[in-house]
Length: 306
Image (tube, rainbow, N blue to C red; front, side, top):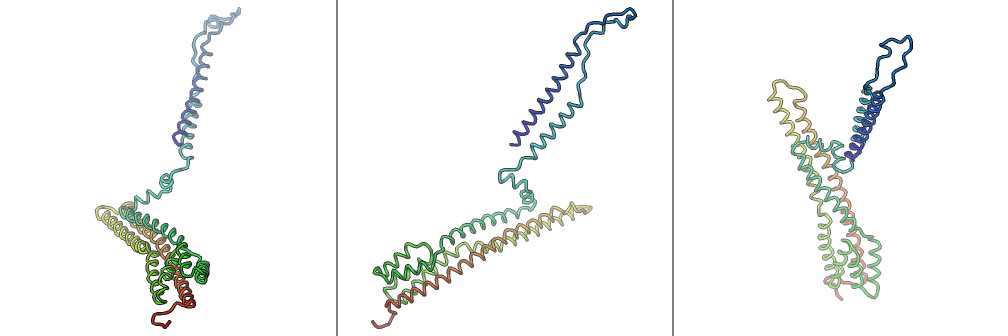
């Protein structure tokens, strides 16, 4: 887009210059056309009747050409600066982020890697926990209705198997052991709960690690920048602000980058922990309701007489 507008500006300026030269040539031709000598009068002198025909070159208007050239330069500058960046990399370069990243030094690269990994984990956890959500009240109503219906436990197991999420999986594991005893049902629910909980907590350790390591990498970059600044001071005869500016800039940029990465990772980790705690509470409530219903339906405990 920039190249097309710049080419257009050059073409327009060239056409304008060609028009100016064409006008000058026409004026020159008009000036070169011989004119008939005036009829001498009785009082005319020889100098008055002399042949003055000939070619007189009309001067080219240099001021107009200079103004056209100046207009061409202004139009080219407008064509370059008026275009907004369209690609992601062009926007990043225009914002100065790439330049700041390069000034941060070598420790900006591992911080960037941690940022990419953390964003991937956050997106995956949002998707997984979103699919794991279940309307617990509706699920329990359907399970209890199936238990009290003609299908009994098999119907309740089918309801759990047809529902997505960790809570139906836990209840299904307990129902499959309900023909043995209540204790077996509770143990199956507890074992399935541990498995589902580990599935829900997957990735949280990565977020916690990134939230802790990113500031440390930033501080390490700070130390590296200060070392570079003091080395520059030691090697110089005279100390000025420009001498140590690059080292101090590296120190501040890496610290800022580490904190920028760590803060959203810590927020995401705490948010997912709160969501998992809610899942755990729902698991405990639904498991207790299921066990109470099985006891009401006559499932015996171990060691109880028939």
